Length: 116
Length: 112
Image (cartoon, rainbow over all chains, first blue to last red; front, top):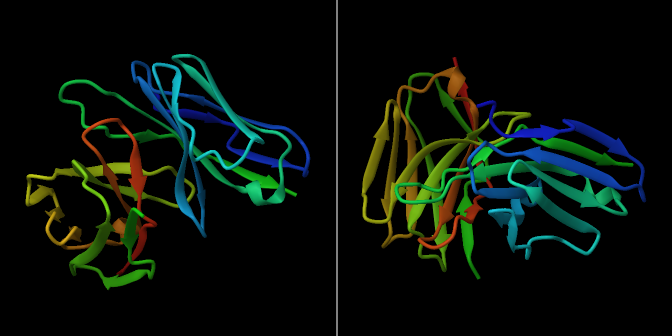
C-alpha cells in the first residue's frame, strides 16, 4: 500500500479564499483523522471519522472549517474563508480498529498551508 | 483539565550516548501510550506502544517504560546515532475509541 496520501503538499492562498485539502487513507482502515500542527500549539486533532461518519469534531476551530468523508477512500478538509492564522501543516492519518488492533495511526506527509 | 507534557527544550547528545525523553500526563487514564518519530517535512511515524499493565517495552535500540503511578513514560535511545536526530512525540489513548492525544514533542539532536 502507498500509505496515506495527501494533496496538495503545499498550498499558498490569499486571505478570504476557499482552501480544500484532500486525503486518501490506507485501504481497509476504518478510522480517519485530521490534525493541524503549529509550533505554538503542536499537533491538534481537528476531527475524526469512523466508517465515514464524523465521530468527534470538537477540535474544529470554527465554522469556517468543515470536513467530509463521502466514501472509505477519500476525505476533504475545507476552510472557507481562509485567514492568515490558519497557516499551519495539516495532517491526515488513518488507523484500523478491531480485535488485536492497537490504534496505531499512519500519517500522510501533510499539507503546508500558507494564507497571505 | 487533561495535559500531556514533554520537554520542549531540544536534547543535544553525543553519538553513542543514551538519550532519555520524558512524557508526563495529568487527569488521564490511558490504556496505551505510544511514541512516534517525526522528521522535518514529514508526518509522525509510529515507533512503540506500551500498555497500561506493561512496565517496559523494547525494540532494537529503543526502550520505553510506563509508570501509571507516576503518570510518566520514559523513552530511551541507546547507542544514539546522528540518524536518530528527529522530534519524538508521545501520545495517549483510551480503551474506548481510537482517538489519540499528542504531547508537544521533544527534538533530539545527536552530534557525531
